[in-house]
Image: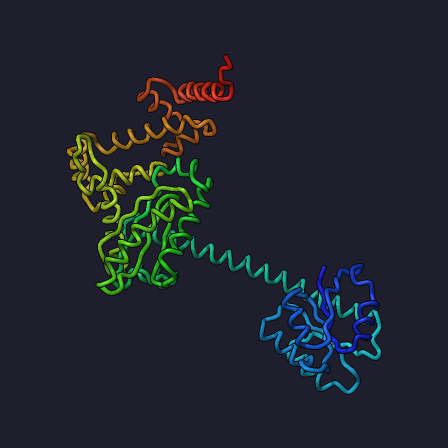
Length: 429
């Protein structure tokens, strides 16, 4: 129901308009009357009418001044003016100022009033529909733009880096200014991702990723040179301008401290954050990302307290956070800019296992934990650890644990059911 306000200094006119039609039967609600423009303006702020019917000649603030004030305040509704014979100049000015039509007081009939009210109503509905359509179109464009940016950064940071010129050309098309001047990069990863979805405040991985990006954006500011890219549901990079050398290190350390604290407070998720050294140029961004990943991975200790070399720690961390994707040796070697053969020898000497064996260990350990979740099917667990052939997954799991995934899941489900039962039915005696 559309709300209507009447402004006229003659009380008899306000009463006549009020009683001329059955407002609510026609979809309108009369929300008030005012005797001059100033009172009508105050009432408009209070009741927010969709349609205003105003006289042009009133003491104090007249109708024209009232309409001008409404336009200054971006009044979104429709204005109909009341006039007398001989007021044509005033009516023309009112129409130029935004009124949609006029009514002659002396000859006014109920049907004329209704016709103009319906005209205003149709315009309001049409404009609302157009606005909603514009919002949908703009959202789709924005969503597409964000997807293109995400793909750009994923290709730039995770795949082999193309030549500098195409990178810059793509960046210009997408409006990306990050990294062109002296900058640094933050690498953020949600730790224990599955637990974060279970215990955190947001259970949907898409919404969680969106929320992390929004919160980080609020923290680092709206500078057009800042970019936040989602590499996966649990990994993000933030590219920040370094600024002047005096405040650079202080600002970086402040952000590194605040991001984990704020995300823990608002989303109840634990994140690891590390910063790269300063760099200039989009073509150096992948190198900076690897350095930040390595910095975060350096805290990971090998057996007996020995720390892995940065390249090996980076590979291990990358494998852990990308178990659900197809990981190939060329891709892993490219991540740390090492020859495949050399990386294999280095990895074996540091960990005592070759890369494939280590990756399979990670996948089976992860699968064993996921199979305890009653809501996940064996096929889904296999996909979550990057194995899409269920027959192969079953064989590998049996090789590691001496039983099929289905049997392991049944035992885990029964144990969970007994625990829940004993919790629900405590001994009374």
